[in-house]
Image (tube, rainbow, N blue to C red; front, side):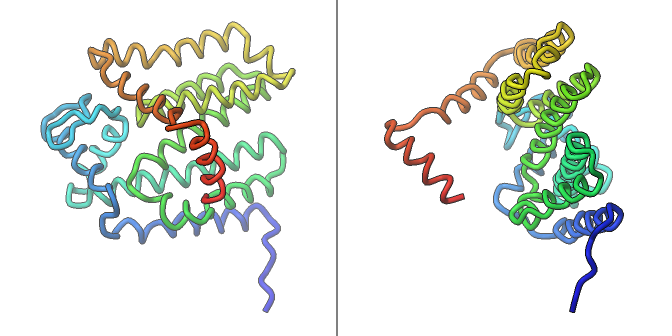
Length: 265
């Protein structure tokens, strides 16, 4: 039996939509791992009418609250007994949106509509993402969406020489920080550093408009920690987590970890 070839963008978009809809049955599954944290933190913030301190069992977990800001209205609308489904819907939706950003980036870079939607479909159906981590109620799928969108907007901004897309990139990365951690800036900075090696991008990335936008973007965490939260404790915790990733018992152990992790993955 021969299956018909997918040789038009429309056919691939239908396939993409069906893959996206296949996340729906996962919304009703039982709690997995630490998914209950999403419900507990959101419910505590809603119950106490506290919108900045991210608490669990009354203790400040020192996490940023963007996920809760999105989760609380949705849980209130559908009922708190369906809070897990609401959280998973946010994460599955983020995964689907990331696939659309992949398609957009491929279209902008290569100018091929068929390749663009194919790229998005390949992303959406990556094994572990498609069957498990793409809908799990952890912050990672949404963090992925914000960070990848920021990097994609930065890349296309360089192609188009567009300060407006730089603003989009800055807003996306700021949202990533507000959702989870300072690592959003690390990923973005690494991508920007690589793009600087393209001579045709360099003048744009080092232009006054780019400097102004990025200074505001990188300045936001300082303002958030010092003036919104009223202290730098959360920032020190985040920075400590970053530095811990660079620590190892010995250089030999660290080198072995780098090799084994790649093979294990």
